Amino acid sequence: MKLPAGKVIITAALNGAFVTKDMNPNVPEQPEEIAQAARECYDAGASIVHIHARDGQGRPTGTKEKFEEIMAAVRGRCSEIIIQFSTGGGANLTIEERVRCLEARPESASLNMGTLMRQSGPYAGVPFSNLTKDIEAWAAKMKELDIKPEMECYSHAMFRDVRNLIQKDLVKPPYYVNLVLGMPYQGAVEATPETLMSMLQFLPTGCYFNTTAVAAAQLPLTTMGMILGGAIRVGLEDNIYYAKGVLAKSNAQLVERSVRLARELNLEPTTPAEARQILGIVKR
Image 1: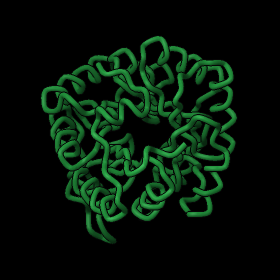
Image 2: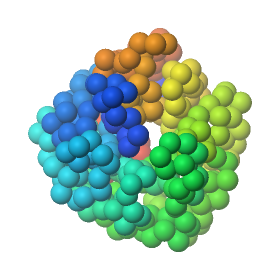
Image 3: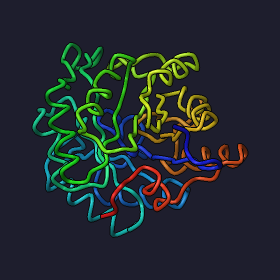
């Protein structure tokens, strides 16, 4: 499905599990930094913030307490923005640790739709495990808690699990699918216009789609996603640069650029309230 005419939903992916301050010192890691980044992105035009938790040393963590601390900090700075936590976690976390963020009751959470193999770095050869039975269990938990799943597809094969959740009534319509392109570290398909167009053909009926593209592909592919009627995700989790060789100053800087492009395309960013209504997200 396309978003309502003249609208685009923008998500800011603030930090991720892989990007560190050594790569870009502007990556927010601790709760107050995350809260400030969330406020800046809201002011710039984002409706959703996608968040990973870090411990005091900047490593991915999955504790309920840390996610609750982040929740309180963000709400203290910005009561309206939609908070989306990641169940992807980090390579150092167990499957059980990755989903404890649901206990903090975010409005939305990512839900990875298949198993991937990490290709490089210290965790090369370690699988990013998302078995169908686990995906079903996590989707059922999200449905029970009124947490909107953002179903992440890194390749065409993952639409099998999207269809499975829909057929088993484990997700509520409208469905929300995030197309993740150009992440070779986890085996995602290439971030090209051709790949994006081909993945759209696999979307089940009743799905809104979001375009996420990594590194230099972020800007052209998210712009294409807007033109095609979808939501988009930008931010330092996926791209630490503003231009070739120029580090981004903040997540908000990347949001601001996409907002300018959207308005040139006669699209207006939704408010969080509008995004909740479109996607069927329950406000906390």
